[in-house]
Image (cartoon, rainbow, N blue to C red):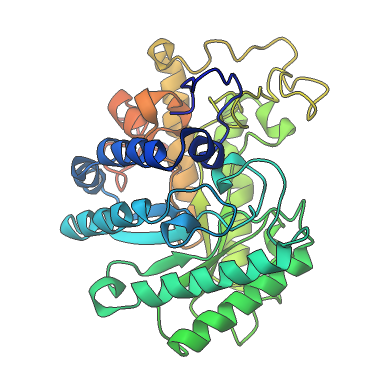
Length: 383
């Protein structure tokens, strides 16, 4: 969808905003419906259950509920597919974490927020207005999924994905967390509704101690753990990378769950570099080989290239063994908190093999049963 040429316009489609803007409402709706109809099907939910998982995390754009003035998004279409996915989850014994993945104005300026570029949530001219709109959205979503027909299958709700405290003062994000929590509790009452996850905003976990006071209940602190954005970790030997989650992140999660609130890894993958297609944005390069212009001045690996690095058909048996160990040790380490979600189940045409659990499962670098693993933080079982 992001690679099509539209008329004589050579500019890139960067995100759902520019996709809808360039295609127009009717064609955008047609293409999005076709994508939703074919990319994730009932067979995928059946497969996820067969793999041994018990929950799925479904990201949701705010335009599923409402499009605001000036936005080109197609309204409501994704909502019907969200509900269909939840019904499939119910059918196969899975539970769902519904998560608001975008805020009006964008909470981080990245393409997966709906619009790449500037941050307009809690920032800029309409920042406070967009924050108020987002509070209304999350309250409406939680109220809906607290209905009897949905409550038992949607026990967890992600309030907002990855607000970027690099661009928004962290005290403003924390104040909005308090405001949104209060609005949800006012709507549902104390002790009711799904557990609410609040993303750490890229603030170290230990700095959240003291924020969630006694007034917060049924809350979870969510963190996303990726090696690829830390140059030192990317440069480590593979055996060190495989052990790092056990030696560092396991302790961090345990302490956070004990001293702050229950803490969950909402995203992780087996990527050890940022070469994945569109990972840093459409038309952008990577830190790994120094092609991410205006962000890096030196490559993480001066003599390396991203060329061919994601060609999974060339993955050696040795490399697959490393990926399996890395994946399983992460799973084990992250269970020192209250659990984890892998990001993501699959990618189109397996274009990003380090972010594609289905491909990993098929190719042998994910466990056949996610609950039966060869590697833990303390041992490796030889089979």
